Structures are given as structure tokens and as C-alpha cells.
Amino acid sequence: MWITALRQALKGLFAQTTRSPADVSAIAVSGQQHGLVMLDDSGTVVRNVKLWNDTETTAVNEVLFYSAGGEKRIRSLIGTTIPVGFTASKVAWVRQHEPDIYQRVQHVLLPHDYVNYWLTGEYVTDAGEASGTGYFDVLSRTWSWHMADLIDPTGRLERSLPRIASSLEPIGTVRPEWRQSLASRRGRWSPAVPVTTSWVPWNGQCGGRARDARSRNIRPFSTSTQKSWHSPSIPVSTSFVVWTVRGCRPSRP
Image (cartoon, rainbow, N blue to C red; front, side):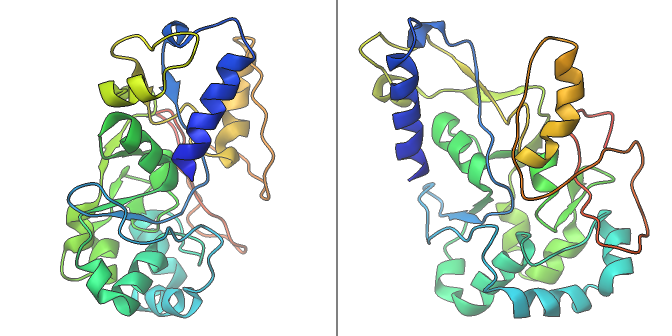
């Protein structure tokens, strides 16, 4: 569905402009966070995606939450918490309820990571996107092997996690076969079009990027079911629920 939508969006784009595919300098994909995309060793999706709003994993998430030591302990491990919408309990749920499918898993991605994989053939994510998994440490900007091991002691999850790239660098180029399939009546794509993990990985980060964009006369826009603020420090203890997300810039949260 996502790839079909991408094809349709590009077709509509070039139908409404005088530009051609050859004018495209780079591609950045953004999208919903937290969703679980599982692939086998050939890069084929092994089951339907569990999206961010899938609450089927509520009971599994509660077990994981207390097994990890509760709120304070989890924040000491990853700098944030693990609400049911995060990816962690989705992985645990599939492992528990669909063991045959889980045994086929070789790559665990998030939704816009999968679109980037389709474009480039690279298994990559970024810190902003990984912040919503529940097994990424937002303080060190690395995967939390402690949380990954709690979810799956066999190590399959650890082996299946993608490389973490900077949001400011290309992760690869559009594959030749897809450049050809995405060609329009206005022409073909240039060779080696770079793809990045995204300038704004998800809508909740858009506000923080907007301040930088204004100085360059760029106008981002975002609608979201959540509110956010941006701080130079990570909250360690709060009296209400805070989900800490790592920002796009390597030097700041």
C-alpha cells in the first residue's frame, strides 16, 4: 500500500509541474512512527504491519514494563518510557503469539525505514525514528541491548536491527530498477539520486525543525494528535508521562 501510494504521489507530482524526474536532487521520506515491519532474509514482509495505534499488545506491554523494572528503571536504561504504542511490545507480541513467523524474521524496520529500504536496498533508521521503539537509548543514541534482550533473549531482535544513520547524511541512492519503474512521461530519473532517512522523520519533530527552517525561508507544516516542546536536556523524572525523542541534529536532543 505504501509503495503504491508513493508511485501515485510521484505520478501526481510530475503531472502538476513543469519539472521532470531528472530535476530531482534528493529524496527524504517521513511518516508515522512506532509501526513494526518485519522482513525475512530476502527483504520480503513476513506479516501485516502492526501500526502505532495497535492496542492488541496492551497485556504484553504491561508484562514487559514491569519485567524491565518499571518507569524509573526504564528511563535509566533508555531515557524515555515504553507506552503501548511503541514498537517494543509489538515485537514481543509477535514472538509470543506467532513464533513460526518470528523465526523467519531477519530485519525489523519502522514504516518510513521500509520505504527507504524499497528505494535504496539499505536497512537503515535514524535516532529520531528509533526513539519511539522502546529499545533505543536516546541518551547514547544507540540500541539498548538490555531492552532488546528483555524482549527477545534469543538475540534475534538484536541481529535484526538496522544501522542508525544521521538524518543529515544520505543513506544510499535510488536503485536503478526503481528509477526505471518510477519514470514518468516527463522523462527518467538521474542516476544516483540520494535518499536520506528524512529531514523531519515524523510529525512530532516538525515544530523543532521549523525554527531552523524559518531562517532559511522554508515553511514546514504539521498536524498531530500530540503536543511537543523542545529542551536542551533530557527529563529524568516527571510527575506526568513524557516521551523523549531524539532530534535530527547529532549534537542536540
